[in-house]
Image (cartoon, rainbow, N blue to C red; front, side, top):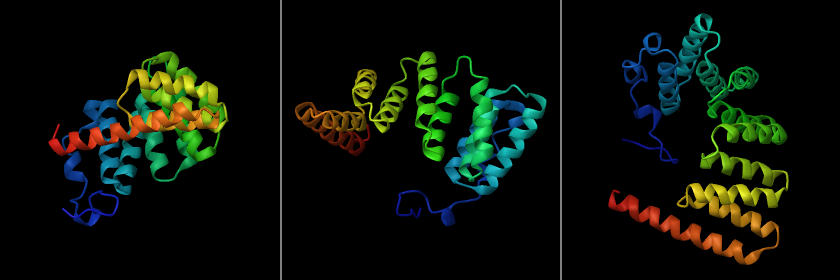
Length: 212
C-alpha cells in the first residue's frame, strides 16, 4: 500500500469509505453507531463521509434532542470540514448537557484553544472535566499545557507531575514539564526530565521493533 509523506495511506490507493462503514447501522446503534462512523470518517479523511455523518447525526438529534454524544460527534465532524461556527455551537450544546462524561468538555476546550485562542475558557472546561475524570492523565496534561500558554508555569508543573504519576511512560509529558522547569530557571530538573524522555523514546522504539 502506498503511503504519503506523513505515513498515512495514500487516498488514491484506498477503496471508498462506504464498504468499511457497512457494518455500522446508526439507526440501530444510536449514538454509539454515530461515534463509530465518526472515527471511520476520520480514518478515511473523507468529506463525503463527514457530510453523511452530519446528516445522520442531525436526523438522530431530531428524534433525540438531548443526545450528548451526537452533539459532540457532529461538532467533531463540522470542525473537520472547516465549519468552525457550527462546530462551536454543537460543542457548546454538548458541554451544556455533560453530567458524567469528560470527553465533550475536553474536546470543546481543545477546540477553543486551537480555533479561537480562548485559553481561559479552555482552562475552565479542563477544570470541569477533571472534576468528572480526575484520573485521566491526558486531562492533566492538557490543563498543564494551557496553563503554560498563560505563563502560569508553577501551576502547570503540578498538573504535569500528576499526569506523569498517572502514566509514567509518556515521553512528551516529561518534555513539556522540562520546558516548564526551564521557564522557572530550574535547569537541573529540566535536564533530568529531558533525559527520561529520551530514554522512554528509545524504549518505545525497541518495543515496536520487537512487536510488543
